[in-house]
Image (cartoon, rainbow, N blue to C red; front, side, top):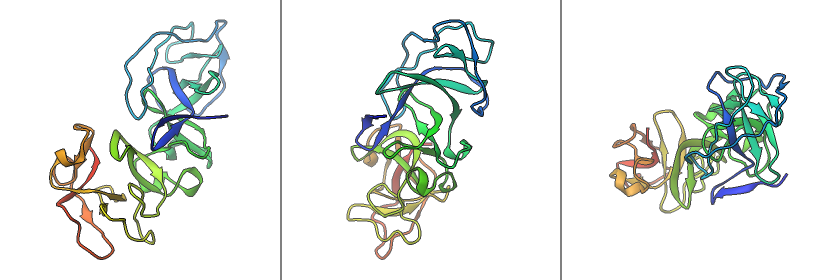
Length: 237
């Protein structure tokens, strides 16, 4: 399947069509609802993408949502493939370690949230710690989601540990390039980010913050030189 671009730093296959609150599901069996399974309506956009989220209507039992003519399992949401418009049930998630398959990631969805889907090169997998990430789903480092050189959503995603701008800079990665320093945040995530002395230096107010100021403290872990500020740009708490 082809995937549509969310922004400069990431791609997404799916958008949220409908969802019902509940625990993360296992992708269990679905039952037909006797209807069309399509959802409609409009909502506000959020997160890394700019697509809308719809609540839809269905004849499904409480806690379950209609999707492509079936009722998804509890904890699942209905997602739509951008390239084809096809809908499918998928377990809702917030971090990739919640997905049971080694090659599945918690894909960052346009409209916000995540769903456990099979990984393909170029998609963005959500994480909260390095332990959520592997080389099989984008890379072993957990770092901020970035578009056009600025933290663009209150989300961390799996990236390479190669000391490239906004990528991981953990042991063995090498040194961050000019204009970036290696900062290790309070959750032990190490990534190359611009140093800062105030939240305003990071742009995108309310989403991007400077560690030691709007965000929790962090430690400089540069190869040689000291970091050029009191903190590093990251996701606001």
